[in-house]
Amino acid sequence: MSGSTSYFRQEGSAPSALNVFLGCGYIALNLYQFYLLPIFLLPRGGIWGWSLVPLLLLTNPFWSLIHEAIHDLFHPSRTINGFFGRLLAILFGSPFRIVRMSHLLHHKLNRLPIEGTEYYDREKGTRSGAAPAYYFQIFLGLYLVEILSPLYFFLPRRFLQWIKNRYIRANTVSALLMDNWLRPEALREIRFDGFLTLLVFVLAFFCYGKMWWVLALALLGRGFLISFLDNIYHYETPVSDVFFAKNLRLPAPLGKLLLNFNLHGIHHVNPAIPWKHLPRAFAIQAGQFQGDYFAAARRQLHGPVAIQELPHARRNA
Image (tube, rainbow, N blue to C red; front, side, top):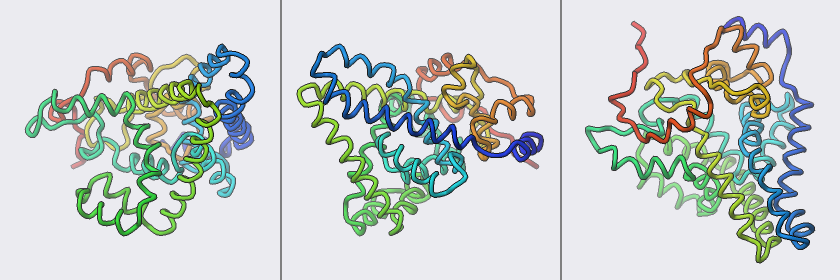
């Protein structure tokens, strides 16, 4: 770890100019998808709808760039980092504060019993009983919760606090997140960004008119890719090892397109290293791959796993 940290300090910081360029590119692509395509091109022929396919394939790289802003690695200026993070998250479909805190808490609670996606306790339930919620989560549920969250936070704060106290168990991930999101300044930001998010998507569906289903299919595809590829780095990894995640082998061009997100294990150990430097950190630390990216994606189709059957992190004496 010390070698890669030293390298990071010597080589400097995030590729801020490139990140801004990519950020502007993804903003333009989303504006094309939401407004330019339905207003100017779809009226000329439905064939133009197929132009959304390559945009759909950029879903996870788009999230990777938001991920850099989440870790304050998009740009050294907090103002620029925050501006792009919030704007990109709005176009993604969820307020930045929600995805940011959810992800940062994931780093703190990674693979603890309260956080694992595929866990079930066979002393309290069965694999078949855990399967519906698990498959819903990895096929669409993760993204669906994120895009619907703004509606929830438009409720009065006192009512939200009552719901938390009444229905959310203490010391759970949801309770910890709600503690942050219900702070007055956080709630104001979520509501403002949530309003803009809803405005962006409502106007987009209005622009599509009778072709609304084209946008709906594109967003379903986005939801599937985000949800399905989110947990592949953690599936069947040791319980309670908060720093462990898989590094997954991916052809170099695809790895760069994904902003080296496939080197997720290196990122979890070194969350302050920008995406551009992850391959070098991987080499310095003599990193190893824990499988192939696409094989890992298929592997999670095996379904939920009893927590008793998974390896557990060794406790230091």
